[in-house]
Length: 159
Image (cartoon, rainbow, N blue to C red; front, side, top):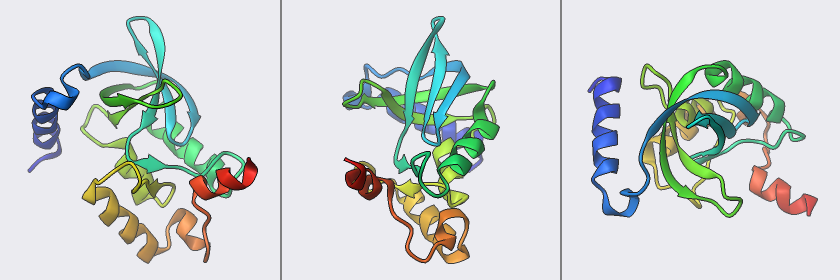
């Protein structure tokens, strides 16, 4: 199945799934990259904060945090993306899947590069699981560290 066909299928499934019927996909230009897993996308002339679905990148002050931000920026900054919202998080950010114009899933690219964890607590996406395992086995990015600290554990230590 081609990437574009997969994206079209995914959008149709999401549009006709009752739990997300109010969450309509939208297209917008990325105007800010706050960190590896949080961007701002213009929607109706206003920047909407988007938290990438299914992943958790290292925090900016954590090892690989700046690399994750730079990687995300190189993928999306200034580009038009498709956002498929799934929910609002406790910080009122839109959580969603973000796709480049060629159908590339930004979350998948970050995990594949070893710059994000699959966020098991909030995602059952088996593709993210496979991509994370492949990155671990290849020792890409943060997986070069023998004992990488997941950001959710790192944040607990900072509070």
